[in-house]
Amino acid sequence: MKALFALVLVLAQAAIAAPVTVQFARFFGSCEAQYAAVTDAARATGECGIVTALTNRFNATQPGVVVQPQIIEHRSYYPQIGARIINRDIPAVAVLHASVLNDFVKRGLVEPLDTGFAEVGIAARDFTAQATRAVTVDGRLYALPFDTHSWLWHLNLNLLRQAGLLGADGRAVLPRSEAELLAQARRFKAATGKPYLILLTVNDAPAFLRTLVTLVHQQGGSLFPRDPLHIDLSTPEVKRAVELLRTLYREGLASHGHDYASGIQAFVAGQGGVMVNGTWLLGDLDKEAGEAGRPLYGGYDAAPFPTLYARPGVWADNHVLVMLKGGTRNPAERRAALQFLKFLYDEGGAWARTGQLPTRRSVIDSAAFTALPHRREIAPLAEVGVNLPLAVARQSRLQTVLGDQLAATVVNEVPPDQALGRAQRSINRMLHRDAQFTGRPDTDRP
Image (cartoon, rainbow, N blue to C red; front, top):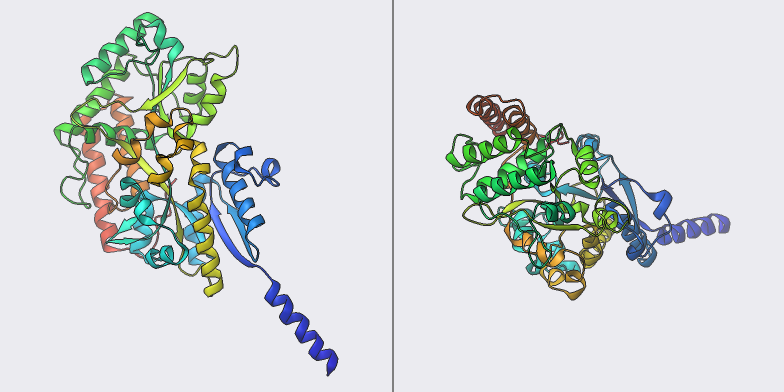
């Protein structure tokens, strides 16, 4: 009997001592071979390195809690998350894009976090306006905004100098209208023999959507002027934006044949003046510009997408962190998951080194953030960033359909009315079907 009692005591003590485990589903790549032992985010670079170092630091400094990263390849991320939810193998915390958050909310798959934020001291009043919009559904907060990522103009100052497109301060002279954009692009091509813009026009539907959202919003328009169930691609604002892209491509003022990877390679190799791409490339391109003998050496800068029409605005999305329903099995696991969210909230400045914008006003206003290269210039994106309305469903599928048809008209010269009409009919049918059936998450997002 004494032996049995001792065994029970040992098992009870072991249970008490066992750490609470938090499963953390994310993308951002895998880099444990390089950063497995790193707990200082300042010693890491890139999204993968910094999120790995932050997770390591949490585990090293939070006794009794262990976060277990579950790393999923980006393109298969949402299908795998959907499959895990169906199979009841649900992570406690998961990274989502804000553009798919409403799909998860309306299907009852994520926990509201208003109360949880208050429990652990996450001050939602510090969120930027853009971040607050991104995580609010029907007046409730359903996610922790982790960053704002947006469209930038990445600039090769060495080539722009050849075309006489630098000011006296050495900064790029950016266009302030559609006419100025075309004039500068033609001047640049005449001076350098190269396209002014490096655009991603091959196998990159999101790139087309992001640019269209930007240009339409700047004109005061919307892709959804009526309601979230009806896209309208027949408006003057859409037609004007599409015709601008067609002109740039037709005249060779924009590059031809680039997907995501080859577009970056072309820009780094000095094959164009401006690459339209995301905030997430800032760190890598700054590093490239520091390499002597390279085409970008000493001549790289970045700026928000210029305002070409009546009002500022540029496409922006967010990485957000949610707590999936069923991912925590008891109060201890729920508390541990909230502690992890609070830790990442506190480390917004470290994550900002990826190039993504913080979602907290206090971090954006801090000296540490504004001291980072380019950050003072791009900080306004945290307020003026725009995207499709949050209530629009199936946004990943939508961007694929619309992006494919934009490619058809911009690259392959399909008449705009034909391509845009085909996209509009397909998207509105999809949105109508989705409104009738909301029993599963958007698992086809790339």
